[in-house]
Length: 503
Image 1 (cartoon, rainbow, N blue to C red):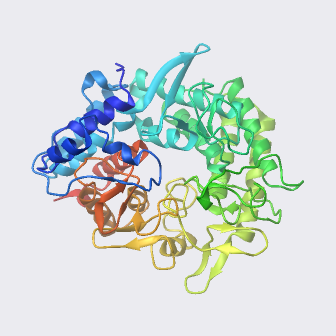
Image 2 (spheres, rainbow, N blue to C red; image 1 turned 135 degrees about the horizontal axis):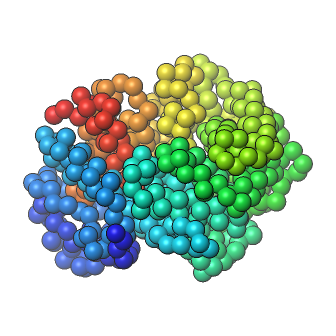
Image 3 (cartoon, rainbow, N blue to C red; image 1 turned 180 degrees about the vertical axis):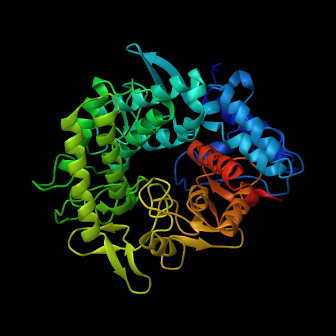
């Protein structure tokens, strides 16, 4: 069943729904009845973050849009929500958050259809009406285990794979796309813009995420039909782009500059980034936060690329693609990048020993930090790039989650990893969720869940970031990836570590 919801419909519903908080009517009275108080955070890193009322929850009415306003309804997702809520009967607020967050992508951001005789699904991020290759992959990822027994959901997910394939064929260097050739607010960026592009920031992970989704879809459903001629052509374009950005033969074709006062939104070196020494790693001019890199070899994204290239090779061998040349090339590039990572990205920290750097340049320079957005160093086990107990990862994790990471913050309400994208003393629910997803320690997981449960500022949803001392000071009221990832965590814990959720 599909609805006809829209961005304004959801903001109106989210803003007008009862939260059980006495300050909300006054807040809506000041801001208007259309939910416009939430729109203050409609851009990542908004300098004017939305504010929600403080107070304690007394009741937990659903914050989902009415059924008639939902973009898509999956029977298996609805059954999962019912099951999880029943298991969380002693944790009513957590059950309420799960009910709101887990289906948020399907409720509010997907637009299923058909194009050229194939399923086609456009997925917005939430408050930005454009499709990021990264976000759209991550938003629908948690639904994969349910797709085998739900034909409508399976078709929707196949539609995301097909749409992402089409996007890569339009421009493999773009990170975000419009639904059609409509142009965007970034048309004047100094790069090779096209009307189909929302933004053209080159990020290695933008090509990794569609591979991860396609591979995961195939493994979950057994459906190899998405690996058609267009997909194989897109994968060859991915390989070409990765090789170009190894920069063995000059700077390559990509360049980007933006007229802006925000330094992380533009690129030094006449748009090509700071200098690198070609050592086999792949340049990523932007991070997954959409902020410019300082040293262009972004290590977690290169690790993600190795994993993704091996998945391409597997699909080309075994996914009824029968393209031995594609498999050979993908495996060879994965081997090269992996060796370069071991040589140039594993570095000595003055206190922690050998760790993964966040960025390097091939000259021996390295950057010790981690960022909340994924891929991050913290997220490596989640992405299949490291084992949770691996000694190198454990030391790197200690860096990411402690005082040696300049973007790790502690306050009176929370602690966690933040990002230059949103500024100091702001942590991301995405990173708190990822900390729990990659932990093997019940107490650590329990603490993360408690933080997420107590810092949503009464809204019933996760946000992009919030102040570590004041969770009502947050950015992005409608950020579907953070919502769905939180739902993935709760569902995983209910199945695998129910003792963590005991009240």
